Amino acid sequence: MSEIKEIEEAVKKLSEEDLRKFRAWFASYDADIWDKQVEYDAASGKLNEMANEALSEYKEGKAREL
Image (tube, rainbow, N blue to C red; front, side, top):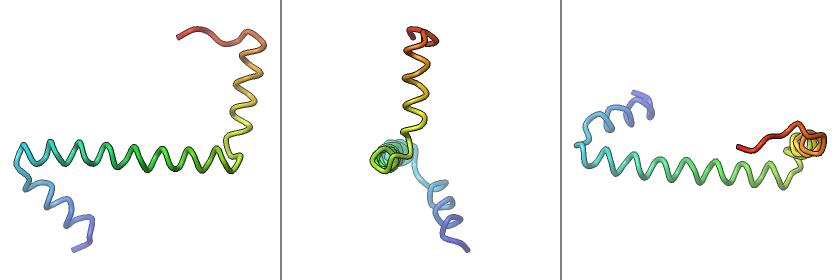
């Protein structure tokens, strides 16, 4: 059995309370990974083109308030 399948089976066996705790932990864990990736992409210049495009559109009046 693969590691993923083992994890899936273990999650299925969790009580409601443990599943709630696991969801909260995993959401936080996943958000941390996402934040680190965005920080890396920003530092490496990977987001520059999108940022420049967004700023240009804003300056041209193409943006609207949310």
